[in-house]
Image (cartoon, rainbow, N blue to C red):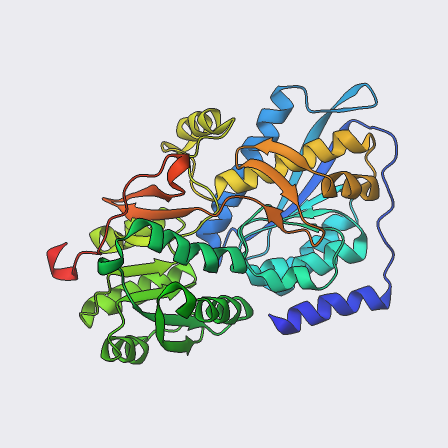
Length: 399
């Protein structure tokens, strides 16, 4: 991922032409999105796509956006990057040359890292969710905005959540971190480790693995031998499914299993059945959150897909809400003006109130969700509709 990001940042220095403003309101306000609809992130990308499309449909049904006293429809052009950062760059460049005024991101930190520099070079505001890598926001990008929890918040809130939910004499104490060999895997592993002892936990293993590995047995057996009673990890969906299957085969049954990202999609329970239960994720949203518009979004999603809105649908929907409001506040289809309006966001969305820090990170709730009986249930924060945590995770033979 570092190579792709470095190449994208290098384009800033080369100085390719910035996309000019569209000018006065026309017939449509064009949004461009590059999303992984195939490849290793396809299950998450499908949720992002659904959120974008539902939001555009809903906003257009209400008349679109108001610019200079005229109603203008939103138009979404969405391309598949096949979960490949190089294709993310190429397809975003294509969209940037087609007069889009806001770019919307896909799923996965490596894809967003590649995308953010492209948006910066072209001076088009970029709104992305479903990525928690904080390092992307440390490059001084002015056009990058993400109403989504980041690694520092996830790590701190992990311990706060466990300490507030589980009595002290029953808590897990020995943590194994199954660390993906990527920038995000290392970043979150570092912060989980740094904040463990002050919260009463000990990291007994930090084991790295390469994405899309087929054999995790050495990692699992080392964690089992170290007496780990909690596992924290951020695998891709295929890796997470393989990890659970091999943990069961090797009879490693920790009290807490957290697999952020891997367990986001409904394909998790379809692949694993009862073995997928009790696993925690932190997807940034849940359909039971008590925020304006969530009930209506769930009804629309239920009508189309036969279930309440999936966990990444809400953040994606909120990105379009934010973009639409920024276009209206800018009063023109001019990307730089829209960027300034987006930076000043203070908006009630389906994610609740969203504001941005100067580095583009969002001030948003950190949410934990758990698979229980084949359903994703909100278990944190307590004041936003959470149900009790299933703890400890049942042994595999008891499921």
